[in-house]
Each structure stands twice: as structure tokens, then as C-alpha cells.
Amino acid sequence: MTDLAAQQEAPKSWERPAGASLADWMQSRVARYETRKYDWNALKFQADYDPKFRRAQMRYIGTGGTGVSTDMNTIPSENFTFSTMVIPAGHEGPPHLHTDVEEVFFVLRGKLKVVIEKDGERYETILTDRDVISVPPGVYREEINIGDEDALMCVMLGAKKPVTPTYPPEHPLASIKRG
Image 1 (tube, helix red, strand yellow):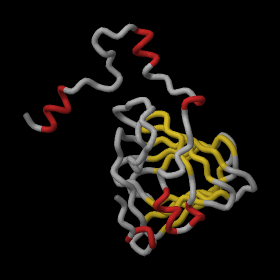
Image 2 (cartoon, rainbow, N blue to C red):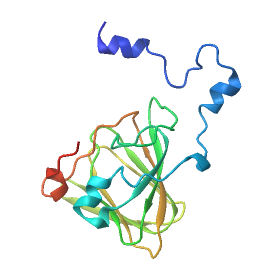
Image 3 (cartoon, rainbow, N blue to C red):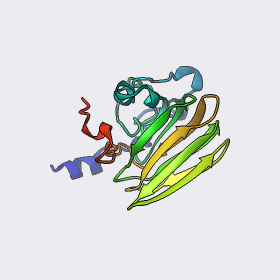
């Protein structure tokens, strides 16, 4: 059997398991804030390079763009990931791109400068409470907390397990090996 055939025959994460009651099934699809924790290690390799890249994720659905998670208490997903991210004041997400998925940032609290670059063109915008941006695949993006307090945002990626993001070739993080 090919990998594709096995994937097509495998039950989808949203399908009700055989013998499960509706309550049991739905309970497995609820992720409560009280059972979440911020994972400051998901992007630790970036913060180890430069402390300004220190950020934390709290995963709810899927593993996120890095696929690195100490939290196995997430809702499985077939088509996207969803987490919240804290970016401390003065910190930033380095420029990166996803080749396979769009990425959505929804700011819950704070003030972020989002920088977008594609083929030598640059676009900047400021996002504040309840603003959202959807960044297409193949476009570099970086988020910089320009406020005086921690920024809190929702992050959604359009795949169950996106391809690991890449950095601009000239960026120092492009040469760091992760393992």
C-alpha cells in the first residue's frame, strides 16, 4: 500500500471514533485555557540566537509551523493549526516565509508592526486590538512588538503540519541547524 493510499484510508481527526459517545467525542475536541501552558521553547532556537526573538506559543489545534511542541494536549487537525502567541514588548518574530500555506495573525492585545517583503517590494502596517492580516505563501513576514506591553495574537496556518518556515538567505537564522 502506498503512503497516499494509507493516508486516504486512515480515519480523519474530525471523525467520531467507533463506540465513542457524542459527549466523549466532543470533549476530545475542546481545548480549555486552564489546561494550556505557554511553550517558551517552541521557538527557543531563535531566542538562543538573539534574545529579541523570544516568544511563546500556546497551542490549541495542531502543532504549529515549527512542528515542535511539548504540549501533546492539543486538538488534532486535518487542515490547519491554531495557537496563541505572546510577543514581549520590544521582541519580534524574525523574517520568515512558509512555502506551502498562508498564515493569519489576529491581534487580541497589543501593537505590532508587520513587515511584508516579496521580490524586492516592502509593505509595512501596524496592527492593534482585533486587527488581522492573512499572509500568502511565499511571502516573507515579520512581526515586531512596538508597544509597551506584551502583545497577544492568534496564529493560524493552513495545514495540519506545514513545511518548516525558511528565512531570507542573508539572515543569520538561515544557517542555524535545528534538531
